[in-house]
Image (cartoon, rainbow, N blue to C red):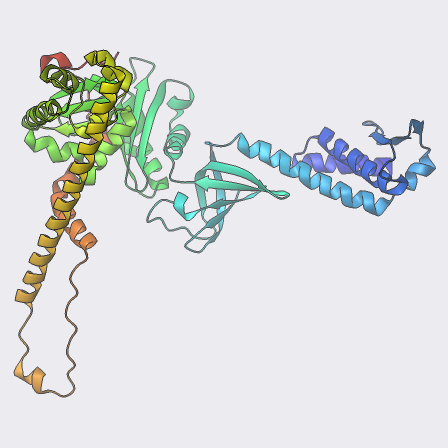
Length: 484
């Protein structure tokens, strides 16, 4: 190969494919060495080196340098094929390194194909895929559209790489905020946590590094302009921006806005936050189909359980009574367990044996026996609950069938006499899932109103959660330790 051709080839690959020159030189050396072995035998001890400045090849066979005429006899076609293969491998490795560094980062591309399943996205130097599972529910993608997504996975497939994108990950919300809000880039404010149910709602906890800057107002923007830009990229997904606090007694109520929280009891041993609200705030705090409390739990890192004061008292009474029935559990121990947030057999069945031994002074065998009993009771309770749900669905189905039968119109004599009239098929009863959805829609209507209020609070930045303080867990039973 002509030395100048080699130099031009190396420079071209470096500029066009962004492959390091040293990688290309090494690939050509390896290719020439492979071709030389085919010329002189696989057992030949041959080494080929390229001068990085001149492009001149130098070869040593069994310790003796080969002349230019001998090097020139190395099979050019074989060398060319091997060089092409090595360069493809080098290009793949370079792209792998580039996109692995982008995992979790946002990229922009043009949709190439979108047929209702996997969509392809042209990122310029690679064609990525956007699986259906990583697309926002209800979102319509069209060829030629430009979209933004985060790099989710990068893997090698032969001499090519496969880049998998995602539009459902919480990182996408955070990266979009960073692109729209300069104060995040310069460190004035910071995103502390993001929780998301893609296509429906996200919660973003923000904190300010400057006491003079309101992080919520900064994120929302003038007349909601900044938050609107993010929502449009996410197909209209609702976004709540809340004020972050290191204190869970402040953060948890903030995360549950717009619901008003009366008290927060922290159960450190099991990572649970029992949140007490008034009856009229219950559905608002829980949200439509539990969405608000789920997102708040993910955002705060606590297992949030919402109830009224009366419900808590009932659970405490049942738990103390139930735990006391277990062999080896005294009433005092039952009370101590409840104080730490253990309110059900399910809770007790997953307690750390060492923690229970420390609390009770019982032996390991006694503790294992208590846990075993709790597991059995939990299974019995689950079976009973499942049977109760089945019976309720059966009653609802029977009631609906009766209502449909009663509401069915009586056939007219003309219809019965007409030979052309065909009997209409009876209306099929709604499936159990449809009934559950129907009842869920009615039960969650107040939750939808709550979501609307929450979105307004998030968009306008009027409700910041300041001034809400959870009462000390020691002020009301069950007492629990405050998270440090």
